[in-house]
Structure formats: structure tokens, C-alpha cells
Length: 164
Image (tube, rainbow, N blue to C red; front, side, top):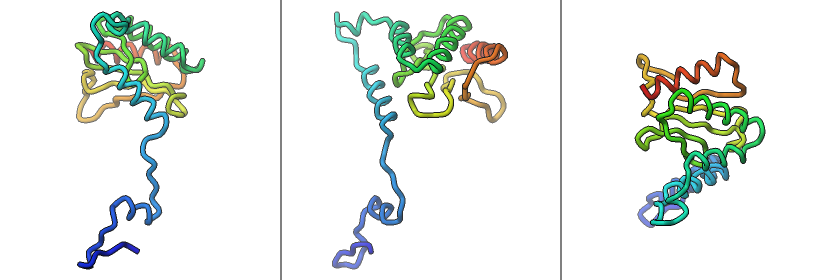
């Protein structure tokens, strides 16, 4: 039963009310917290003359890809090659600890490992800076389990269109 003050008003917090209603919210998952920590590291300003100032963003991206399980790594490596070939003007970088590609400092597209978030598929996503607008509704993320030649053609076309 909700607590009441001397004035008769309910003084229970919304959190305790929802907990008593059987709803459970544990906050962010361990994987989400890890991704946020990765992003915080990425945002730290490079110190003058420090190691971060000399870091190679593509090498950092490839190091993250190398840490992925075999299936995700194979997808990420192939998508990396397709993006670099289709839009060499995009800058490879990590974003929330995942491979991403930016134009003028803004992430255009990214790869999300299935393993990292315990999903049944990897994701190739596009941010709002990607010029994929088509009509009043269009996809901005694609589930990826494998890459066929047709899939590779689609990715190449989407990346080229995203930076046009």
C-alpha cells in the first residue's frame, strides 16, 4: 500500500510504485554500460604530445574488429573493405567501441557486432547524416547474418548514396 503523509497525499516515489506493480527495470545492461564506457574513452580530448594525439583511428577500428568473434569479425572486415572502397572520403573511427565511418566528424554509418549486445544478428546502421531519405519512411539499419554478392552491392550503393 502506498505511503501517505499527514495530509493524506501519496508520498511513494514512482520507482517504488512501479516496483510494487511488478514492473522491473534494472537500467542499462552490462553490454550497454561497456559501450558507454568505450564512448567516454573516445571522447576524451587528445593531450598535447600524448599517445592519443598520435593514434591512428583506422588502426583502432581494426583492433576492435580483431577482438570480435570469428563470425562478426568476418562481417566487419568485409563491410570495412566495402565502405572504404565505396566512400574513401569517410574517416574510419570507433564509436561506442564499434567500427564507424564519419564525414566532417559526424558518423554516417556503423557496424554493430551481434556478440557485443548478445543479438542474433549484426547490424549495419546509418545515422541521420546519411543521405538515404526516400519518401516519408526509409530503413536506417540492416540486420546482417552473412554477406552475399547482392548484399555487398546493396551496401556499396547505400554507402555511396549516404555520402552523396
